[in-house]
Amino acid sequence: MKRLALVLVVLAACGGKDKKQTNLAPLPDDKPVAKAEPTPPKPEPEPAKPPPPSGPLDLKIPATTTTVKLVSAGKGKRQPLKLSAKAGQKQAVEVSLDFALKQSMGGQSEDNVVPTVVLSGDAETKAVDPSGTAQYTLTITKTDAKETAGSQVPIDKFKEILATLSGLTIGGTVGPNGSTGEVTMHLDKQAEATGQAVELIRLTLPPWPALPTEPIAPGAKWQATTTTKLADKLDVTQVTDYELVSYKGKVWTIKGKTKVSGADQMMQGGKITKITGTGTSDFTLADGALYPSHKTTLDASFIASEAEPKSNPPAQLEFAIKMGAQIVAK
Image 1 (cartoon, rainbow, N blue to C red):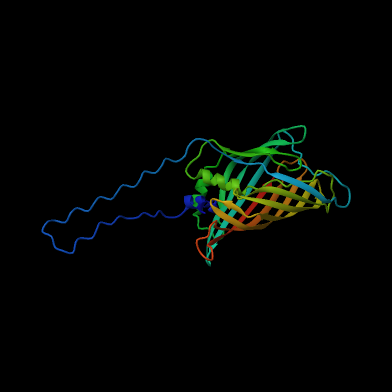
Image 2: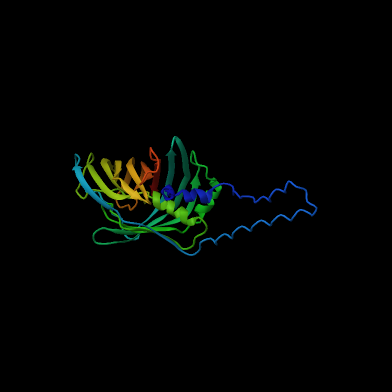
C-alpha cells in the first residue's frame, strides 16, 4: 500500500531534520573485574549515500480518450469555438499547482500538504497542421513556491528544489477542440529531488478544456467524458458538464463541473473501492490564443484494503486527494 501515497516522496525529500540512530555501547557487567574494561566497539560507519542523479530527465503524460456530446447549442448567433493559434506565436504563461493528500485509518488521520508550486515561462506554437492541430512547447524560465496552510515542508528548501526546474520543457500537440496527444517533459540536467518535483508537476498539470465541434452561442451546454487515471494510478472516468457563459470581445468564458467515478479494482496486491470525486473549472479563451487562462479544482477519495482480509472487520485505509491548478496566459 505504500506506493498509494503517490507524491509523498516529495515531502520526504524536502522534509525536516535528519534522524540518526546512535549505537550505544553495552552496559558493563554487574561483577567487578580486575582488568580494565574492554574498549567499546567502534560504531559502524554510515552507508555511503548514492550520488545524486545527473544527466537529462524525461517523463511523459499519456494521451487520454475524450468524447464530447453537445447538449444545447445556446441562443443567438452561433460561432465555432476552437483553439486557433498560429505557428510562431508566443505566450507568457504562469502555472500554479497545489496538491494535498489525507490518509485516515481507525479514527486517526495524517495530512500531507505541498506548498503551491509556481512556474513561469514562455509557450510557443511550433507548427500547425492542416487540421488545426498545434505543436507547442512551454519552456520554464522561473520558479517559485508559496506557503500553503497545513504544509510542513520547509518553504526555503522547497524553493531550492524547484529552482532546479529552470529550463524544463513541456510539449505536445493540441487539436482545435482541445484534444491532446502525449505530453512530454524534458530537462537537460537534474539534481537531487528534481525528479520528484517533476513527477508532482506531471500529476497536477491540468488539461485543456474539451470543446464541441459544432458552432455554439452563449448558454450552450456540452458534456465531455474522459477515461483517464486518477493521480496517474487508478482507472477512472471523469464526466464534465460545460457551459458557455459568454462570448464578448472575442473572449470565450466557460464553466465546468466534473464528477469522478471508478469501478472497484486491484492495485499493488490491495483492493481499491468507493472511488468518487468532484471538480470545477473556469476557462477564459481568447480567439487566436494557444493557452486559455483557467482555474481548476479536483477533490477525490477512495478506500484501500487488503485483498484477503486478515482481520474482522478488515483494515481499511481511506485516501482523500485535493488538487488545484491555475494558469494565467497573456
